[in-house]
Structures are given as structure tokens and as C-alpha cells.
Image 1 (spheres, rainbow over the protein chains, first blue to last red):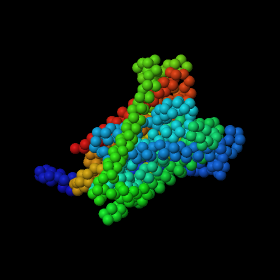
Image 2: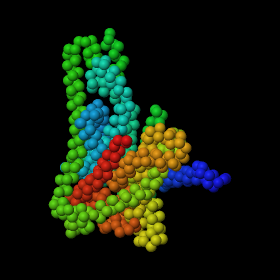
Image 3: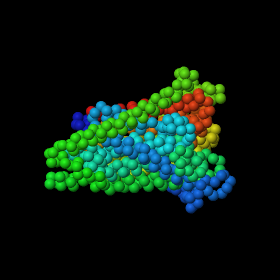
Image 4: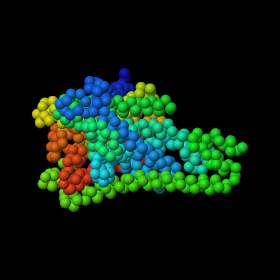
Length: 291
Length: 322
């Protein structure tokens, strides 16, 4: 009120800064909330659009029939559903044992030089773009076998899954209290027995969750399959022959000039997204429940 | 009797072998030896698994380097800076693709950074301990799990028409697909990663700093801008670099949206190609040996750029905060 007088008298003046600061604070809140809302709205938009467009392509025939040549109405994507399941099984069989042993190595030998090297290798594997995995597996398996194959596709997905599994399984092993291991050893159990009988069972649910997330990730991968599993218009369960997969079908169909196939691409995207999202949802619900 | 006591602890249900527990009796005869043997074998199995993973990594580098040798021998360093890419005349210069890759990724990063900062700050500060925050975090993580081919599909249906009308508006060639479309979808794809990393960085600052700042009467804006963000700076930069390396290696969405044209990108609306999208679209059609080798060379360049960005990010992440 009488600031100028007070200032003239040489007294310290406290200006009321609250209002501008409060205003800036509110503006900041609005500024950070907008992008967050935008992103969540986009997410809802994407999911709803895929579900909506995809649902129109869905019917029983879509799920149980093979692809028909263009021009013939009808047909489905059963070859891709079976192919994706097959690839997941192969990838799991190839990556799970190696990943579990690798995670155990990192856990038991942590701090050692060899563990740090392995950790570096895992980090590098995780950083390899998925298309490069496809190219290298083509070179390693498809060229010697002289044929695209389900085996090669599964191997490529296994390499994608491996670093993810090792990372997540290692976290699961870390959550087991060190006293379990100590107690087992103190009771005279040999190390392998303590690990196989105590540590791994105690970390079981974390290990299963890791596998679930790894599968969810591998199921949606397209790039590593283009030169390995290759795709196949017919239902095939041969390990040595090319197989279809849902992501490959989406890519192939949307590239085609036919409206009917575009429709089917959305249908395949529907199936793939529902599978991946529900697997992720179930696992995050489990995790939150346990904590 | 002691053997019985140890039973429930070590009982794993199946595969239980009583002789394994005989050590408890102090009679370390035959069984003790077997256990030692088993342990050694167990360690050998673990070491073999670790060696297999390391060999796998080395094999990647070796395979790519060996297979890329013919094209590098033919083109020399021009493989990196040449702008001609013509399988028919066997000229292979990868610069248009390197430019396409780096350009789309940097654009995507520039679009994604403000969005991720906002999302990360809302989730990591404003909704730090609330149920709503946890729920939204699950949603953001779900966004990260949508397969990239689905993003590509969505981009074809939504982003391409939008960019086409924008191009008509500003008088650019209305292809629809191109650098801008690819960058936009790429940015939506990396926002979940980046915002999770920013959220983690904000949550991991010491609580004392936050409480101290509020005790001094700071507003949330002043606390975040003056205390939290500066403290978390190096983790945030690391998060940005890791997201960048993801964007560089992303294949499907970019292949579906960038237009697949072999030329230097000249504007936001021009068609282009990224390293990953060239490999995706030409690998199966490569007929000559040099063309195939050039594909492997592109994969090698891509791997190198991606690993460099990821490695720098991880180095920053693990740097001790003083």
C-alpha cells in the first residue's frame, strides 16, 4: 500500500510474488496435462479403430478357412493363426532354456568379469534392430537349408525374445531373498540343488510373467519373419517349409490393391492386437496384485 | 532323523532324491562326491549358456561384416556417402537411406519429446502415488506393446490421408506417404518408451529434494523445473537416446509409410527410404551377389548406428549422479 514510502524510508520491501507464481504453476499444469491427455486419447483412438474395423472382417470362416485366391469371396486366415502359434512355440522352446540359464549365470556370478561380458552381450542383442535379426537368421538357417522355414522364423523370434527374457528373469531371480540360497546351502544342499529346488521355484511366477511378455512381444514382430518364415497362403505345419503369420498377413494384405484384402488385414490386426494386449493386461494385473 | 527334518525345506515335489540329502548325516562318502560332480556340471552348463549368448552376438557382427565385404570392396567408402543406388548398374551408395533413417528418427524425436515430457511429468509428479496414475501407466505401457505392423496399418488409414490434405494445403506433392508420415507414426510409437523412462527418472530422485523444495515454498512448476528435471537430466538424456535407437531400427511402420523411393529426401513431404525399409522391400528381390552383399552392408550400418545410440544412452544412464 505504502510501498514507495517504505522504500523511500530504506526499509526492505517484500513484493507479493504469489499471484504470478501461482499463475505460472497453473499454466505449467495445463501444458503438461495436454500432451498426456492427447497421448491417451490417441491410444484409445488407435485401439478402438482397429477393433471397430477389424470386427467387420470377423466371422467364423475368417477364423477357420485358408486364404482364397483374389476374386473368390470368403476365405480366412487360419494358416496365419496356426503359423503364429507354431512360431511362438518354436521360439519359446529355443529361447526359454537358454534365457533361464543365462539369467541364472548373471544372478549367481554377478560382479564377475564374465557376468559383465554376458550383460554387455545381452544389451547388444536387445539393441539389434529386428530386421537385422531377420537378415542374419536368413544367412544362418535359410541359406544352408535352401528354403524358408518355420524353424528359421522361430529362431529369429527366439533371438528377439532372448534378451528380453534374460532381463526380466534376472529381475525375478533378484526378488528372491538371498537368505533362501544361504539357508539351502547351510542345510547342505549342493549349489545346483539349491538353485533348481529353491531359487527357481521361488521366482517361478516372475519367470512365467517374463515368458508371457516375451511371447507378447514376439507375436507382433513382422520384420524378422519376412526373410525367414516368409509367409504361406496355405495351412502348413511343417518345420522345414515356409509358414504364414498374422503380422505377415497384415503387411501383405494392406500392400495389395484389393479392398477385400484390406478388410482382412484389419481383421488380422484385430486378432493380433487382442492377443498381445490381453496377454499384457493379464500380466500387469498379476504383477499389481502380487505387489 | 535329521534327514527327515531337511525334507520339507528341500522337497521340490517331483524329482526328489533322498540320497541327495545324505550329506546331512556327516557321512560325506559317495554322495558328497556326486554332489561336487553335479555342481561342477551345473556350473559348466551355465557357463556354456553364457558362452552361447556371447558367441551369438559375435556371430552377428562377423556374419554381417563378412557378407558386406564384397560391396565395401567394390564401392569403398563411397558405400557410406554415395547418393546413387541402382541395382541394375550395380552402383550402391547408402547415403539416401542413412539420411532417411536419421531424418525420420530425429523428427520423430522432436515430436515425441514434448509429448513424453508432459506425459512423464504428469505420471511421475502429479499422479505419483495415485491409483489413477498407476492405471494410466498401465495404459501407456499397453501403447508400447502394440505391434509395429498395427501402427503401420493405422498410419495408412489415418495419417496418410491427413498428411495428404496437409500437403495439398501447403502446395507440396500430395503423396500422403513420405518422411513426415513416417516420422509422425514413429513419434507415437516412441512416446510410451520415452515417457516411461522420464517417469522413472522423476520417481527416482531422492524424496528429500522434493520435500525440501516444497518446504521452501516452491510451486510444483518451480520444483519440477528447478529441482527435479535438472537432477534427473542425465537419465532423461539417456532415455531420449535409448528411444532414438529404437526409432532408428524400427522397420515395419516406416516401411509402410515412407513411400519407398530411392532418392535423397528434400522436404518433409518427399518420399524416401530408411535403411530398415530398404532391406525390408529389396532383400527378397536382390538378384546379384553384390546387391545381396549391399543389403548386408546396409544391415551393418543400421546395426552400427543403432548400437552407438543405445550404448551412449546406457553409458549416461549408469553414470553416477553426484
